[in-house]
Length: 267
Ligand SMILES: NC(=O)c1ccc[n+]([C@@H]2O[C@H](COP(=O)([O-])OP(=O)(O)OC[C@H]3O[C@@H](n4cnc5c(N)ncnc54)[C@H](O)[C@@H]3O)[C@@H](O)[C@H]2O)c1
Image (cartoon, rainbow, N blue to C red; front, side, top):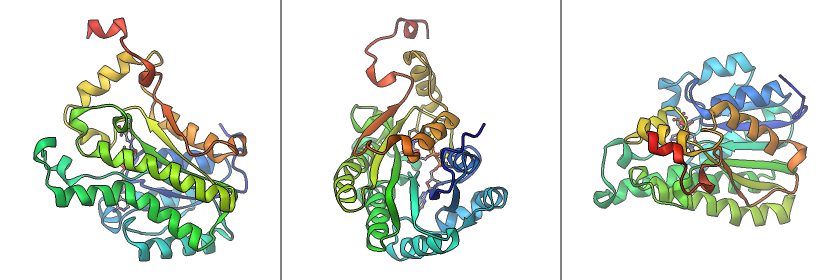
């Protein structure tokens, strides 16, 4: 169903790995709403993932970029402006990775070199993307930048590990850079705090199934799906949210406001 909410807009979508990825659903939805986009992911993901398939389907150029590399980001953003025929209206940052999580290192036993890598990939990359976009003057006035986050930034979820700190940092970059991008180009910057969602990154977290079921029961509206997250992104990229900025927006079926849901007792 299209309402042409993004007709004529140009965007860059980071993080579509396979058809489970939230970014994959966002890419499909924004194109359905009339946007033209470029797709990007880390060069290594080009080998394992299916991003080219998505690019072919959506008529979107795929431009590899390691989001921790300023050089790659400079190339990505200038090539995107060229390929799309003008400045960018929206960017989705949908990137997360932790070697500590992958290797099952418990929180009190974290490897700190890997931790720095986690922060670089999952959070500092957001600052890098915005810094390069600003330096290249690549964003249109009233553009919109969104990153995906999780509520472990505010509350403790032990198995989420150091990704909790990465998400806190990510959300803080949205507020701080949101000020500068707002003042300079009227660009808004927000994070969407999404429900647990079945994806490669999500299901890599220990005990994900139990946690997914718990959140599903705890939330009066149930967990938000990747498709619903894509709908929310469309709204945030559209002209209907021009004054929403520097916010962390919960998209979680009500989970973040709950104390106790009696239905949890029947788990
Ligand atoms: N799945 C969930 O339960 C959930 C919940 C809340 C928030 N999120 C967030 O949503 C975002 C997308 O994750 P997803 O669940 O769709 O999983 P996903 O695994 O499909 O997406 C993560 C993406 O990050 C990319 N990536 C990793 N290292 C990179 C690098 N150096 N440069 C560029 N890209 C790199 C991966 O290739 C992958 O495409 C992440 O920020 C994640 O933390 C996910």
